[in-house]
Amino acid sequence: MLVRLAGLGGLALWLLPALSHAGLFSSQARYYGPTTPSGYRVRVEPQAVTLSHSQRQPIHVTVENEAGQPVDGVPVQFRASEGNVTTDNYETQGGTVTGTFAAATGSDQPRTVFVVVTVENVKVTVFIDIVPAVFGR
Image (tube, rainbow, N blue to C red; front, side, top):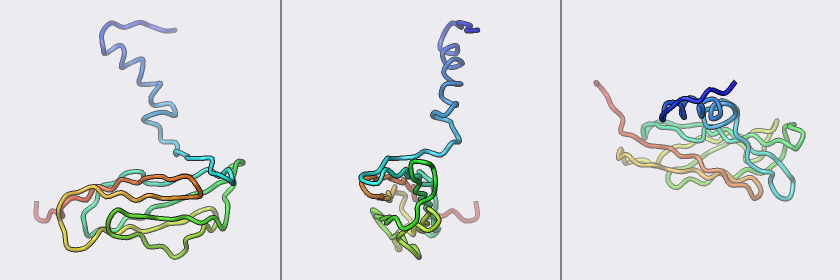
């Protein structure tokens, strides 16, 4: 049964279930793709994170085929706007690759860094907000 409520509050009550069910507030993983030419689906986590300049952040990449099965041996590239991303393997094993982001040394200034993850023709950008380390507060 649809109940019409007056004002913006009513609109918010109507929109909230729509946004939270596989939408804006969904906890379901976001897939990108299909890739060309293989038709893979790509998931990258996290999509955004905040950390201090001295912290390291793992970036997990999952590659699946059309049936949702993990795919091995798929090349994954990481490109950071600053700092670097290191990994033990740049090809999927068990359908996954994990790279670890480290910010450039020498600066504690707030800024946003991005890491572009590429699988075939699909590019996913991870946004990393670097904040000053705060001690004794």
